[in-house]
Length: 134
Image (tube, helix red, strand yellow):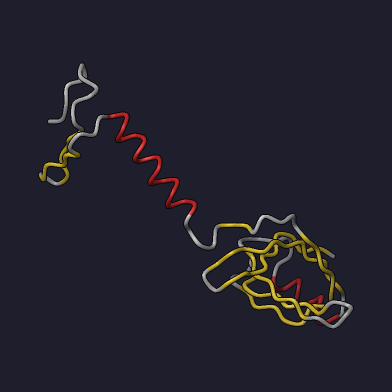
């Protein structure tokens, strides 16, 4: 099966479930370059994984709403800043406070500071909180 290890320009071939797999005219180096290019294209083209390129930003405000993803993670956090603007955030893991702790802030009227970045997703730009602090 395959090619001789002494001839690097021999076509790459193999078997997948008993069906021969051969890329005519492609040697091992070409197959590696093609594979790396394909991986790079898929990784760079995945929506939701790209930052918009800006530095992390911060906003402080009062907690308006908290929706839990689970006991440790926040799905949605809405805060109102001092100018009255309501900001909506999501998280991609634990961001420093549990949903229960944020509900305490909401109940007692204690402000929080959110460090966030914009993410480019299918639904548009989304504010992703990386750190929530007192």
